[in-house]
Amino acid sequence: MWNDNKLTLVRCAIALGALQAGGPLSEAEESLVSRAVSCARISHRDLDELRERIRTGEDPLGDALTTMRLNKERRKLGQFLTPAATVQYMVDWALSKDVKRLIDPGCGSGRFTRTAIHRNRKLRIIAVDIDPVCTLLTRAALACCNALNAIVCNADYMSLTFPQYQFKTAYVANPPYVRHNYIPKRSKKLAAALASKLGYNISSTAGLHALFFLATARNATAGDVGCFVTSSEWLDVNYGAIVRKLLLDGLGASRVWMFSPELRHFEDAKTTAAITFFEVGSIRNTLAFKTVYSSNELRSSRSQPSIFAPVKLLAKSNKWSTFVQIKGGAQGQTACLGDVARVHRGAATGNNKFFVLSKQRAKQLGIARWCQPAITSATEIKQSDGIVRDDDSRLVVFDPPADINRRRWPALDKYLKLGENSTENESCVAAGYLASHRTPWWRVRVPKPPIMVTYMSRSAPVFALNPDELGLLNIGHGVYPITPMSKVQLLKLVALLNARRENFVGFGRTYFGGLQKFEPREMEAVPFEFGPTDES
Image (spheres, rainbow, N blue to C red):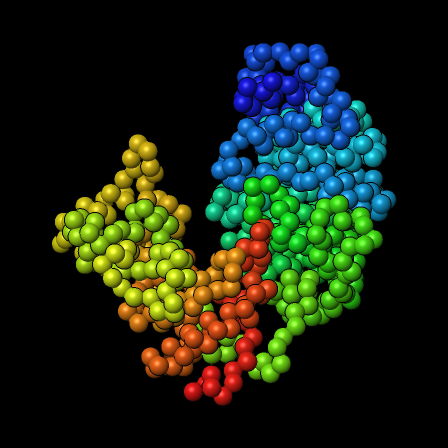
Protein backbone atom coordinates (compact mmCIF):
# COMPACT_ATOMS: atom_id res chain seq x y z
CA MET A 1 0.00 0.00 0.00
CA TRP A 2 2.74 2.46 0.97
CA ASN A 3 5.29 1.87 -1.81
CA ASP A 4 7.97 2.82 0.75
CA ASN A 5 7.03 6.45 0.16
CA LYS A 6 6.22 8.84 3.01
CA LEU A 7 4.13 10.99 0.67
CA THR A 8 1.90 8.00 0.00
CA LEU A 9 1.60 7.63 3.78
CA VAL A 10 0.67 11.32 4.06
CA ARG A 11 -1.86 10.83 1.25
CA CYS A 12 -3.42 8.04 3.30
CA ALA A 13 -3.55 10.29 6.40
CA ILE A 14 -5.35 12.93 4.35
CA ALA A 15 -7.88 10.37 3.14
CA LEU A 16 -8.50 9.31 6.75
CA GLY A 17 -9.43 12.89 7.67
CA ALA A 18 -6.16 14.47 8.85
CA LEU A 19 -7.11 17.86 7.39
CA GLN A 20 -10.27 18.00 9.47
CA ALA A 21 -8.68 17.22 12.84
CA GLY A 22 -6.34 19.04 15.20
CA GLY A 23 -6.78 22.63 14.05
CA PRO A 24 -4.85 24.71 11.49
CA LEU A 25 -1.91 23.14 9.64
CA SER A 26 1.65 24.45 9.88
CA GLU A 27 3.51 25.60 6.75
CA ALA A 28 5.54 22.38 6.81
CA GLU A 29 2.38 20.27 7.01
CA GLU A 30 0.74 22.25 4.18
CA SER A 31 3.83 21.71 2.03
CA LEU A 32 3.65 17.95 2.57
CA VAL A 33 -0.07 17.91 1.85
CA SER A 34 0.35 19.82 -1.42
CA ARG A 35 2.96 17.30 -2.57
CA ALA A 36 1.04 14.26 -1.38
CA VAL A 37 -2.28 14.99 -3.10
CA SER A 38 -0.76 13.93 -6.42
CA CYS A 39 -0.10 10.43 -5.08
CA ALA A 40 -2.38 7.57 -6.05
CA ARG A 41 -5.66 7.37 -4.18
CA ILE A 42 -6.07 4.75 -1.47
CA SER A 43 -8.91 2.30 -2.04
CA HIS A 44 -12.01 2.59 0.13
CA ARG A 45 -11.48 -0.96 1.27
CA ASP A 46 -7.96 -0.22 2.50
CA LEU A 47 -9.11 2.98 4.20
CA ASP A 48 -11.94 1.21 5.99
CA GLU A 49 -9.53 -1.45 7.21
CA LEU A 50 -7.04 1.16 8.47
CA ARG A 51 -9.76 3.19 10.17
CA GLU A 52 -11.04 0.13 12.00
CA ARG A 53 -7.53 -0.91 13.09
CA ILE A 54 -6.87 2.57 14.49
CA ARG A 55 -10.20 2.60 16.32
CA THR A 56 -9.40 -0.75 17.95
CA GLY A 57 -6.04 0.48 19.29
CA GLU A 58 -3.52 -0.41 16.58
CA ASP A 59 -1.06 2.03 15.00
CA PRO A 60 -0.67 0.95 11.36
CA LEU A 61 0.46 4.40 10.20
CA GLY A 62 3.17 4.68 12.85
CA ASP A 63 4.34 1.13 12.15
CA ALA A 64 4.56 1.92 8.44
CA LEU A 65 6.58 5.08 9.05
CA THR A 66 9.00 3.15 11.28
CA THR A 67 9.48 0.57 8.53
CA MET A 68 10.07 3.24 5.89
CA ARG A 69 12.65 5.29 7.73
CA LEU A 70 16.21 4.08 8.05
CA ASN A 71 17.52 3.47 11.57
CA LYS A 72 20.00 6.32 11.13
CA GLU A 73 17.22 8.80 10.30
CA ARG A 74 15.06 7.65 13.21
CA ARG A 75 18.00 7.95 15.62
CA LYS A 76 18.47 11.58 14.60
CA LEU A 77 14.77 12.23 15.16
CA GLY A 78 14.64 10.08 18.30
CA GLN A 79 11.62 8.16 17.00
CA PHE A 80 11.25 4.92 18.93
CA LEU A 81 7.64 3.82 19.34
CA THR A 82 6.27 2.90 22.76
CA PRO A 83 4.78 -0.59 23.31
CA ALA A 84 0.98 -0.56 23.60
CA ALA A 85 0.94 -1.99 27.14
CA THR A 86 3.17 0.82 28.39
CA VAL A 87 1.08 3.47 26.61
CA GLN A 88 -2.11 2.14 28.14
CA TYR A 89 -0.65 1.98 31.63
CA MET A 90 0.71 5.53 31.51
CA VAL A 91 -2.47 7.04 30.08
CA ASP A 92 -4.66 5.22 32.59
CA TRP A 93 -2.47 6.44 35.45
CA ALA A 94 -2.70 10.03 34.22
CA LEU A 95 -6.46 9.94 33.71
CA SER A 96 -6.94 8.42 37.16
CA LYS A 97 -5.73 11.77 38.52
CA ASP A 98 -8.92 13.52 37.36
CA VAL A 99 -7.22 15.59 34.65
CA LYS A 100 -9.19 17.67 32.15
CA ARG A 101 -6.36 18.31 29.67
CA LEU A 102 -3.58 16.06 28.35
CA ILE A 103 -0.45 17.35 26.64
CA ASP A 104 1.54 14.86 24.55
CA PRO A 105 5.02 16.31 23.84
CA GLY A 106 6.81 14.50 21.03
CA CYS A 107 3.58 12.80 20.03
CA GLY A 108 5.02 10.78 17.14
CA SER A 109 2.22 8.94 15.40
CA GLY A 110 -0.15 9.77 18.28
CA ARG A 111 -0.13 6.60 20.38
CA PHE A 112 -0.66 8.37 23.71
CA THR A 113 -3.09 10.85 22.20
CA ARG A 114 -5.18 8.17 20.53
CA THR A 115 -5.29 6.02 23.67
CA ALA A 116 -6.43 9.00 25.75
CA ILE A 117 -9.21 9.73 23.24
CA HIS A 118 -10.34 6.10 23.46
CA ARG A 119 -10.75 6.61 27.21
CA ASN A 120 -12.46 10.01 26.93
CA ARG A 121 -13.48 11.54 23.58
CA LYS A 122 -14.21 14.89 25.24
CA LEU A 123 -10.77 15.19 26.85
CA ARG A 124 -8.90 18.33 25.84
CA ILE A 125 -5.74 17.23 23.97
CA ILE A 126 -2.64 19.12 22.81
CA ALA A 127 -0.29 16.93 20.77
CA VAL A 128 3.11 18.34 19.78
CA ASP A 129 5.82 17.11 17.41
CA ILE A 130 8.51 18.82 15.36
CA ASP A 131 8.10 16.30 12.52
CA PRO A 132 5.25 17.29 10.15
CA VAL A 133 4.83 13.71 8.92
CA CYS A 134 4.15 12.61 12.49
CA THR A 135 1.70 15.41 13.22
CA LEU A 136 -0.27 14.56 10.09
CA LEU A 137 -0.42 10.90 11.18
CA THR A 138 -1.61 12.03 14.62
CA ARG A 139 -4.31 14.15 13.00
CA ALA A 140 -5.45 11.10 11.02
CA ALA A 141 -5.66 9.02 14.21
CA LEU A 142 -7.70 11.75 15.93
CA ALA A 143 -10.06 11.89 12.96
CA CYS A 144 -10.57 8.13 13.03
CA CYS A 145 -11.38 8.28 16.75
CA ASN A 146 -13.77 11.24 16.39
CA ALA A 147 -11.86 13.42 18.84
CA LEU A 148 -13.94 16.40 19.88
CA ASN A 149 -11.44 18.72 21.55
CA ALA A 150 -7.91 18.15 20.20
CA ILE A 151 -5.19 20.45 18.89
CA VAL A 152 -2.07 19.28 17.03
CA CYS A 153 1.00 21.52 16.95
CA ASN A 154 3.81 20.96 14.48
CA ALA A 155 6.42 22.79 16.55
CA ASP A 156 9.47 22.49 18.80
CA TYR A 157 8.24 21.64 22.30
CA MET A 158 11.17 23.57 23.77
CA SER A 159 9.85 26.83 22.31
CA LEU A 160 6.19 26.41 23.25
CA THR A 161 4.22 27.90 26.11
CA PHE A 162 0.66 26.72 26.67
CA PRO A 163 -2.37 28.81 27.59
CA GLN A 164 -3.22 28.81 31.27
CA TYR A 165 -5.81 26.25 32.19
CA GLN A 166 -7.96 26.30 35.29
CA PHE A 167 -8.13 22.52 35.58
CA LYS A 168 -5.51 19.84 36.10
CA THR A 169 -3.24 18.98 33.14
CA ALA A 170 -1.39 15.72 32.51
CA TYR A 171 1.91 15.59 30.57
CA VAL A 172 2.26 12.09 29.12
CA ALA A 173 4.93 11.23 26.58
CA ASN A 174 7.82 9.26 25.21
CA PRO A 175 10.18 12.23 24.59
CA PRO A 176 12.40 11.76 21.52
CA TYR A 177 15.54 9.77 22.40
CA VAL A 178 18.07 12.09 20.72
CA ARG A 179 21.68 12.35 21.87
CA HIS A 180 23.22 15.78 22.31
CA ASN A 181 25.29 15.75 19.10
CA TYR A 182 22.06 15.64 17.05
CA ILE A 183 20.39 18.50 18.95
CA PRO A 184 20.50 21.85 17.06
CA LYS A 185 22.51 24.66 18.65
CA ARG A 186 19.35 26.79 18.76
CA SER A 187 17.62 24.22 20.98
CA LYS A 188 20.65 23.98 23.25
CA LYS A 189 20.69 27.77 23.65
CA LEU A 190 16.97 27.76 24.45
CA ALA A 191 17.55 25.05 27.05
CA ALA A 192 20.47 26.90 28.66
CA ALA A 193 18.46 30.12 28.88
CA LEU A 194 15.41 28.34 30.27
CA ALA A 195 17.46 26.43 32.84
CA SER A 196 19.07 29.67 33.98
CA LYS A 197 15.68 31.33 34.27
CA LEU A 198 14.45 28.49 36.47
CA GLY A 199 17.61 28.62 38.59
CA TYR A 200 19.48 25.60 37.19
CA ASN A 201 22.44 24.74 35.00
CA ILE A 202 22.13 22.25 32.17
CA SER A 203 24.97 20.32 30.56
CA SER A 204 25.61 20.84 26.85
CA THR A 205 25.71 17.03 26.54
CA ALA A 206 22.15 16.57 27.83
CA GLY A 207 19.94 14.38 25.65
CA LEU A 208 16.66 15.72 24.28
CA HIS A 209 14.59 13.85 26.89
CA ALA A 210 16.32 15.94 29.59
CA LEU A 211 15.31 19.09 27.71
CA PHE A 212 11.70 17.87 27.65
CA PHE A 213 11.65 17.58 31.45
CA LEU A 214 12.95 21.15 31.59
CA ALA A 215 10.32 22.50 29.17
CA THR A 216 7.60 20.71 31.16
CA ALA A 217 8.81 22.33 34.38
CA ARG A 218 8.33 25.73 32.70
CA ASN A 219 4.75 25.03 31.63
CA ALA A 220 3.38 22.90 34.46
CA THR A 221 1.65 24.40 37.48
CA ALA A 222 0.98 23.05 40.95
CA GLY A 223 -1.48 20.15 40.80
CA ASP A 224 -0.53 19.04 37.28
CA VAL A 225 0.76 15.49 36.83
CA GLY A 226 2.93 13.67 34.35
CA CYS A 227 4.65 10.46 33.36
CA PHE A 228 7.47 10.17 30.81
CA VAL A 229 9.01 6.98 29.49
CA THR A 230 12.64 7.64 28.59
CA SER A 231 16.07 6.10 28.52
CA SER A 232 17.14 5.56 32.12
CA GLU A 233 20.52 7.24 31.54
CA TRP A 234 19.48 10.39 33.40
CA LEU A 235 19.41 8.47 36.69
CA ASP A 236 23.21 8.20 36.75
CA VAL A 237 25.03 10.38 34.22
CA ASN A 238 26.31 13.92 34.77
CA TYR A 239 23.94 15.49 32.25
CA GLY A 240 21.04 13.90 34.10
CA ALA A 241 21.66 16.16 37.09
CA ILE A 242 19.16 18.68 35.68
CA VAL A 243 16.44 15.99 35.58
CA ARG A 244 17.18 14.74 39.08
CA LYS A 245 17.08 18.27 40.48
CA LEU A 246 13.84 19.14 38.68
CA LEU A 247 12.15 16.00 39.94
CA LEU A 248 13.06 16.74 43.54
CA ASP A 249 12.52 20.49 43.33
CA GLY A 250 9.18 21.44 41.78
CA LEU A 251 8.14 18.63 39.45
CA GLY A 252 7.40 16.45 42.46
CA ALA A 253 8.53 12.97 41.42
CA SER A 254 6.54 10.19 43.08
CA ARG A 255 8.04 7.02 41.60
CA VAL A 256 10.45 5.63 39.00
CA TRP A 257 9.75 2.28 37.37
CA MET A 258 12.89 1.00 35.61
CA PHE A 259 12.63 -1.83 33.09
CA SER A 260 14.98 -4.76 33.43
CA PRO A 261 18.12 -4.41 31.25
CA GLU A 262 17.24 -7.75 29.62
CA LEU A 263 13.99 -6.26 28.29
CA ARG A 264 14.28 -4.52 24.93
CA HIS A 265 11.60 -1.92 25.53
CA PHE A 266 12.28 0.26 22.46
CA GLU A 267 12.92 -1.44 19.14
CA ASP A 268 16.31 -0.46 17.62
CA ALA A 269 17.34 1.50 20.73
CA LYS A 270 19.75 -0.42 22.94
CA THR A 271 18.97 1.41 26.12
CA THR A 272 17.29 0.58 29.39
CA ALA A 273 13.93 2.31 29.76
CA ALA A 274 12.35 3.97 32.79
CA ILE A 275 8.94 5.50 33.48
CA THR A 276 9.02 8.55 35.73
CA PHE A 277 5.83 9.71 37.46
CA PHE A 278 5.48 13.20 38.92
CA GLU A 279 2.85 15.35 40.60
CA VAL A 280 3.82 19.00 40.34
CA GLY A 281 4.29 20.84 43.61
CA SER A 282 3.93 17.76 45.79
CA ILE A 283 6.37 17.29 48.66
CA ARG A 284 7.47 13.79 49.66
CA ASN A 285 9.93 12.28 52.08
CA THR A 286 10.58 9.25 49.87
CA LEU A 287 10.64 8.31 46.19
CA ALA A 288 9.54 4.81 45.12
CA PHE A 289 11.74 2.73 42.79
CA LYS A 290 10.93 -0.61 41.20
CA THR A 291 12.33 -2.96 38.56
CA VAL A 292 9.82 -4.08 35.92
CA TYR A 293 10.49 -7.21 33.87
CA SER A 294 7.83 -6.77 31.17
CA SER A 295 5.35 -4.15 29.99
CA ASN A 296 2.50 -6.47 30.91
CA GLU A 297 3.83 -6.66 34.46
CA LEU A 298 3.09 -2.96 34.99
CA ARG A 299 -0.47 -3.75 36.04
CA SER A 300 0.34 -6.95 37.89
CA SER A 301 0.13 -7.12 41.66
CA ARG A 302 2.85 -9.79 41.45
CA SER A 303 5.49 -7.38 40.16
CA GLN A 304 8.56 -6.55 42.19
CA PRO A 305 7.87 -4.56 45.38
CA SER A 306 8.90 -0.94 45.54
CA ILE A 307 12.00 0.32 47.29
CA PHE A 308 11.47 3.66 49.01
CA ALA A 309 14.51 5.95 48.95
CA PRO A 310 14.70 8.98 51.27
CA VAL A 311 14.56 12.23 49.30
CA LYS A 312 17.34 13.69 51.47
CA LEU A 313 19.61 10.85 50.41
CA LEU A 314 18.63 11.18 46.74
CA ALA A 315 19.46 14.89 46.81
CA LYS A 316 23.06 14.01 47.72
CA SER A 317 23.40 11.12 45.27
CA ASN A 318 24.65 11.30 41.68
CA LYS A 319 23.61 7.73 40.90
CA TRP A 320 19.97 6.89 41.44
CA SER A 321 19.91 3.44 39.83
CA THR A 322 21.53 2.04 42.97
CA PHE A 323 18.17 2.51 44.68
CA VAL A 324 16.40 0.28 42.17
CA GLN A 325 18.29 -2.75 43.31
CA ILE A 326 20.04 -2.76 46.68
CA LYS A 327 23.61 -4.01 46.28
CA GLY A 328 25.24 -6.18 48.93
CA GLY A 329 28.95 -5.72 49.48
CA ALA A 330 31.60 -8.16 50.52
CA GLN A 331 32.67 -8.05 54.11
CA GLY A 332 35.79 -6.07 54.82
CA GLN A 333 35.40 -3.54 51.97
CA THR A 334 37.46 -0.58 53.07
CA ALA A 335 38.04 1.50 49.94
CA CYS A 336 36.81 2.42 46.47
CA LEU A 337 38.89 2.48 43.32
CA GLY A 338 38.66 6.28 43.50
CA ASP A 339 40.60 6.21 46.79
CA VAL A 340 43.71 4.97 44.98
CA ALA A 341 43.26 6.18 41.38
CA ARG A 342 41.44 8.59 39.11
CA VAL A 343 39.66 7.40 35.96
CA HIS A 344 39.52 9.51 32.80
CA ARG A 345 38.20 8.93 29.29
CA GLY A 346 40.32 8.13 26.28
CA ALA A 347 40.49 10.65 23.45
CA ALA A 348 37.74 11.06 20.86
CA THR A 349 39.11 12.02 17.45
CA GLY A 350 35.78 12.89 15.86
CA ASN A 351 36.80 11.12 12.65
CA ASN A 352 38.82 7.92 13.05
CA LYS A 353 38.97 7.43 9.29
CA PHE A 354 41.15 10.56 9.09
CA PHE A 355 43.05 10.41 12.38
CA VAL A 356 43.75 6.67 12.72
CA LEU A 357 46.22 5.10 10.28
CA SER A 358 48.51 2.12 9.94
CA LYS A 359 52.20 2.77 10.56
CA GLN A 360 52.93 1.98 6.92
CA ARG A 361 50.33 4.46 5.68
CA ALA A 362 51.66 7.19 7.98
CA LYS A 363 55.17 6.67 6.56
CA GLN A 364 53.89 6.77 2.96
CA LEU A 365 52.18 10.09 3.66
CA GLY A 366 55.28 11.50 5.36
CA ILE A 367 53.44 12.21 8.63
CA ALA A 368 54.75 9.38 10.82
CA ARG A 369 56.65 11.74 13.13
CA TRP A 370 53.33 13.33 14.16
CA CYS A 371 51.64 10.03 14.87
CA GLN A 372 51.75 7.92 18.01
CA PRO A 373 50.93 4.23 18.46
CA ALA A 374 47.65 3.77 20.25
CA ILE A 375 45.01 1.35 21.47
CA THR A 376 42.11 1.85 19.08
CA SER A 377 39.94 -1.17 19.90
CA ALA A 378 38.64 -2.49 23.21
CA THR A 379 39.45 -6.01 21.98
CA GLU A 380 43.16 -5.19 22.31
CA ILE A 381 42.68 -4.65 26.05
CA LYS A 382 40.41 -7.66 26.48
CA GLN A 383 42.93 -9.99 24.81
CA SER A 384 46.05 -8.45 26.39
CA ASP A 385 46.34 -10.79 29.39
CA GLY A 386 46.98 -7.75 31.58
CA ILE A 387 49.67 -5.96 29.50
CA VAL A 388 49.34 -4.06 26.19
CA ARG A 389 52.50 -3.74 24.06
CA ASP A 390 53.58 -1.90 20.94
CA ASP A 391 54.41 -3.80 17.73
CA ASP A 392 54.67 -3.21 13.98
CA SER A 393 50.99 -4.01 13.38
CA ARG A 394 49.70 -1.44 15.83
CA LEU A 395 47.70 1.48 14.45
CA VAL A 396 48.74 5.07 15.10
CA VAL A 397 46.87 8.30 15.78
CA PHE A 398 47.67 11.51 13.92
CA ASP A 399 48.11 14.17 16.63
CA PRO A 400 50.40 17.10 15.67
CA PRO A 401 51.24 19.74 18.30
CA ALA A 402 48.92 22.72 18.51
CA ASP A 403 51.66 25.26 17.79
CA ILE A 404 53.40 23.50 14.90
CA ASN A 405 54.33 25.61 11.87
CA ARG A 406 52.66 23.49 9.23
CA ARG A 407 54.19 25.45 6.35
CA ARG A 408 57.64 24.15 7.29
CA TRP A 409 56.45 20.62 6.66
CA PRO A 410 54.86 20.21 3.18
CA ALA A 411 53.70 16.61 3.80
CA LEU A 412 52.00 17.63 7.06
CA ASP A 413 50.40 20.67 5.44
CA LYS A 414 49.14 18.53 2.56
CA TYR A 415 47.49 16.05 4.90
CA LEU A 416 45.91 18.78 7.02
CA LYS A 417 44.46 20.32 3.87
CA LEU A 418 42.78 16.98 3.13
CA GLY A 419 40.95 17.37 6.42
CA GLU A 420 39.98 20.96 5.65
CA ASN A 421 38.34 20.27 2.29
CA SER A 422 35.10 18.49 1.53
CA THR A 423 34.78 15.85 -1.17
CA GLU A 424 31.82 14.75 -3.22
CA ASN A 425 31.06 11.91 -0.80
CA GLU A 426 32.39 13.19 2.54
CA SER A 427 32.08 16.40 4.51
CA CYS A 428 35.03 18.40 5.79
CA VAL A 429 36.79 16.72 8.77
CA ALA A 430 37.69 20.09 10.32
CA ALA A 431 34.00 21.11 10.36
CA GLY A 432 32.93 18.03 12.31
CA TYR A 433 31.39 18.44 15.76
CA LEU A 434 34.49 17.57 17.83
CA ALA A 435 37.08 19.04 15.46
CA SER A 436 35.23 22.35 15.20
CA HIS A 437 35.27 22.64 19.00
CA ARG A 438 39.06 22.16 19.26
CA THR A 439 41.82 24.75 18.83
CA PRO A 440 43.38 23.95 16.45
CA TRP A 441 41.00 21.43 14.95
CA TRP A 442 43.66 18.73 14.52
CA ARG A 443 44.89 18.64 18.15
CA VAL A 444 43.41 15.42 19.60
CA ARG A 445 45.62 15.27 22.74
CA VAL A 446 45.76 11.50 23.01
CA PRO A 447 46.48 10.47 26.64
CA LYS A 448 48.99 7.77 27.65
CA PRO A 449 47.59 6.34 30.89
CA PRO A 450 49.66 3.89 32.95
CA ILE A 451 46.65 1.54 33.11
CA MET A 452 43.84 1.05 30.58
CA VAL A 453 40.40 -0.44 31.16
CA THR A 454 37.42 -1.34 28.98
CA TYR A 455 34.23 0.51 29.87
CA MET A 456 31.56 -1.08 27.68
CA SER A 457 30.96 -4.81 27.49
CA ARG A 458 28.56 -7.59 28.38
CA SER A 459 31.13 -8.83 30.86
CA ALA A 460 33.03 -7.11 33.67
CA PRO A 461 35.73 -4.53 32.72
CA VAL A 462 39.23 -5.73 31.85
CA PHE A 463 42.38 -3.87 32.97
CA ALA A 464 45.80 -3.78 31.30
CA LEU A 465 49.19 -2.24 32.11
CA ASN A 466 50.59 0.18 29.50
CA PRO A 467 54.43 -0.02 29.82
CA ASP A 468 55.09 1.25 26.26
CA GLU A 469 53.05 4.43 26.87
CA LEU A 470 50.60 3.78 24.07
CA GLY A 471 47.93 6.37 23.39
CA LEU A 472 44.31 5.61 24.24
CA LEU A 473 41.24 6.46 22.19
CA ASN A 474 37.76 6.55 23.70
CA ILE A 475 37.30 2.81 23.39
CA GLY A 476 38.57 2.64 26.96
CA HIS A 477 39.29 4.67 30.08
CA GLY A 478 42.66 5.48 31.60
CA VAL A 479 43.41 4.68 35.25
CA TYR A 480 45.85 7.08 36.95
CA PRO A 481 47.10 6.22 40.48
CA ILE A 482 46.82 9.18 42.87
CA THR A 483 50.30 8.52 44.29
CA PRO A 484 53.25 7.49 42.08
CA MET A 485 53.72 3.74 41.72
CA SER A 486 56.65 1.66 40.55
CA LYS A 487 56.22 -0.73 37.61
CA VAL A 488 55.98 -3.62 40.05
CA GLN A 489 53.27 -1.85 42.04
CA LEU A 490 51.35 -1.00 38.88
CA LEU A 491 51.53 -4.62 37.77
CA LYS A 492 50.19 -5.76 41.14
CA LEU A 493 47.35 -3.22 40.99
CA VAL A 494 46.33 -4.45 37.52
CA ALA A 495 46.42 -8.05 38.76
CA LEU A 496 44.23 -7.11 41.72
CA LEU A 497 41.71 -5.23 39.58
CA ASN A 498 41.43 -8.08 37.09
CA ALA A 499 41.10 -10.63 39.89
CA ARG A 500 38.19 -8.63 41.28
CA ARG A 501 36.55 -7.61 38.02
CA GLU A 502 33.19 -8.94 39.22
CA ASN A 503 33.11 -6.16 41.84
CA PHE A 504 32.17 -3.84 39.00
CA VAL A 505 29.04 -5.72 37.93
CA GLY A 506 25.95 -3.63 38.66
CA PHE A 507 27.75 -0.32 39.21
CA GLY A 508 27.57 0.87 35.61
CA ARG A 509 24.58 1.56 33.40
CA THR A 510 23.10 -1.64 31.98
CA TYR A 511 21.51 -1.66 28.54
CA PHE A 512 19.41 -4.17 26.65
CA GLY A 513 21.03 -7.60 26.47
CA GLY A 514 23.21 -7.04 29.53
CA LEU A 515 25.54 -4.50 27.91
CA GLN A 516 27.20 -2.50 30.71
CA LYS A 517 28.74 0.95 30.34
CA PHE A 518 30.82 2.71 32.97
CA GLU A 519 31.36 6.43 33.28
CA PRO A 520 34.69 7.38 34.94
CA ARG A 521 33.06 8.42 38.22
CA GLU A 522 31.07 5.19 38.31
CA MET A 523 34.29 3.18 38.09
CA GLU A 524 35.85 5.24 40.86
CA ALA A 525 32.88 4.44 43.10
CA VAL A 526 33.34 0.66 42.92
CA PRO A 527 34.32 -0.72 46.37
CA PHE A 528 37.29 -3.06 46.92
CA GLU A 529 38.71 -4.96 49.82
CA PHE A 530 42.40 -4.06 49.92
CA GLY A 531 44.02 -6.73 52.08
CA PRO A 532 47.63 -6.76 53.34
CA THR A 533 48.93 -8.47 50.20
CA ASP A 534 47.20 -5.92 47.98
CA GLU A 535 49.07 -2.96 49.42
CA SER A 536 52.56 -4.39 49.09
